[in-house]
Length: 529
Image (cartoon, rainbow, N blue to C red):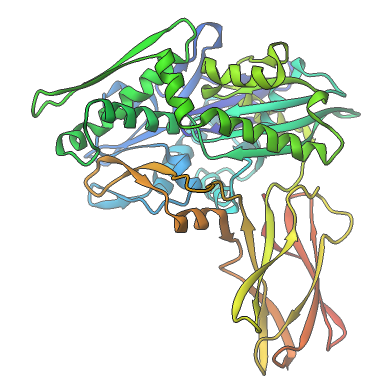
């Protein structure tokens, strides 16, 4: 059955949905041989584990194939790719004589999944929709574009995950009502306050406020891993721990999934070191997991994400009391204590969970089929300029987070000056500014693969944090203004106006103040997020 496709590439699992024009609804696709059911009871849905293995023969195994071959924790297996790509990780692993990065592995995985989905749904040539976290930077969306090109997909759209979830809930939401989409997946947590509107062409989703944090199910796996080592008096640098670190992480993830089922009260983690015969083990019950999450301030961080989204919505005239319901999304939202956190904020009667594992993919398929929504820019964007009096680079905001698009009027106007005599080529360096989440003496950590192929816990340095919160988006082409005749140092040479089009592109119109002419009109500079 042909249909538009929605692809939710997740940190832990990837979900695919196809739109059926006859029923005007989306259905989750099963990809035989690659997928597996995930969830509990009537919440089970078909997913493809976001994992790829490169064999010694340089073949690729994907998803459930990796599990079936018992290679989930083997060398040459890549997982959590989305998170490393989003953080621009420099990690590389030597496999079959070549260095493979998460960007490479993610591209090989997702391009193959796209081809499989198009074949399964008989959707070759149809438009697809890919999802991205609200906190993602332009480089991640660019990477998705490269993947679709590698897969031979010529028509694709991007939608942020909470907005896709709002569209995916479909019949469960009513026009004129406000909802909070709470999406807690493998790599991120996101909250979006949305207003559902009725239009001539059907319903649309207007995003009132949204926020996110780079914490997810894989973070919880890391905390369980650290707790396991602490209880056994071990360190991730111990040789025997290094040998079994991958297997330990698999068991930590399994324990988390088991304890996400309200019917389960405990889980056992146990891994045998084949070289020494020693067993590293831990019993983890529900109270122990909740205490672990509380010690790492998970619930406080979830609360802060929700409050930030609500504050953003309040600037548009909507507050917490206007929220009709909280709609839970993502595998980590199934953890009972996570749901209780939302119930504590909004009350039990306003928190709902209906197929949280595939609602994003189904909404993405609806978006690919033409269901619309009104959105705004998520991050601040700033122009870097050189202050001659201090000798330092400074930043001036040109687009503020929350700006609606497309813009009817210029969103920012500025003057570009020459920095030296006889200058002909002048440029504008535009930076995307994320939120620095480190506060006070708080120390962030993450799991990384060392050169020996073992997992270890590493601190996220202030330089790492700075690099992840500030990104030069037009680094490859910052210079595009040409002064004829050449300009002198300090001379105001161009007046530029910024606007935003329907595709979230930042457009520039430049006026030559000396020549008295327009040199650029609606010139696309960068893609905003």
